[in-house]
Image (cartoon, rainbow, N blue to C red):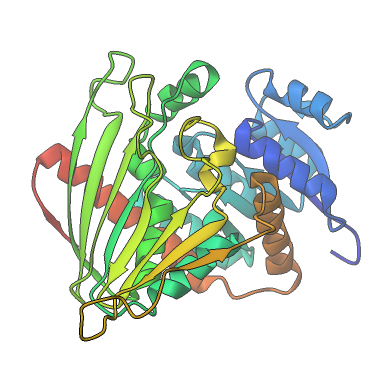
Length: 358
């Protein structure tokens, strides 16, 4: 960019779009050139940022008017592909909130066009930038094989967040939208090939489209014998009991992300709590001749647990380096497509009520 900041057009100004916009403002290598949303969120974001960025209701008009170097796409998932392809057409690098698209074919189209255009594509997998989760995955590698992975994120959503969830469920179920994060983690933990998935799902509200469901649970098997399950439910009816479970178990012990501050007792729909995870409890299974544990559990504490905003800052710093240093993103994109392919197979398993081979 010849020493100049990378101009970025922010498309989508809700929770994630606002967080990414704040990250761009704090990064010396980026300069926001416009905000795009269909509703009033762009105006509200301008006010929050105490800024006067150009505002647009139409992303194509915004692309033409601002001619950005890059775009940040944080709209509803069923719009990602069309916006991404249009932005690539006019020569932009892409930061796209997960999932990259709602189909594997759509992901591959974006990746192919970006490759042909020589543009970088980064997908927003926020947990890959979280020090606690990085250590959690590294600890799993020391537990032996096979692994058992237990994870969930249920949200007792109300008010604004229930409106967000209802809009998301126009195109995706919770296990697809959120599951890409945790299937990505499971694949990193096992470093093995997934072989089959099964899943269940239930529609618990008349506000949910008749062809979708707001509670789901998936199960996955890997070729090394490891297994995992993930559960996600959205809505005012959801229980907040054990809404944040993050466990991995192997022959040599187990590791769990826990809160010593009661963070997971309530407030399940608060976005800050979804990434707040400052302690790993590492249990060791080795015993002496009396079947007593040889070692007490370790508590690995992270005093500087990053906020959700700091994690978004980390993501955008990675995006900047990807552009400036021409990072090889092939594995990054392969992993993004792989995790989406798995959760889409899980969604199919719900609808067909049978196990799907991968």
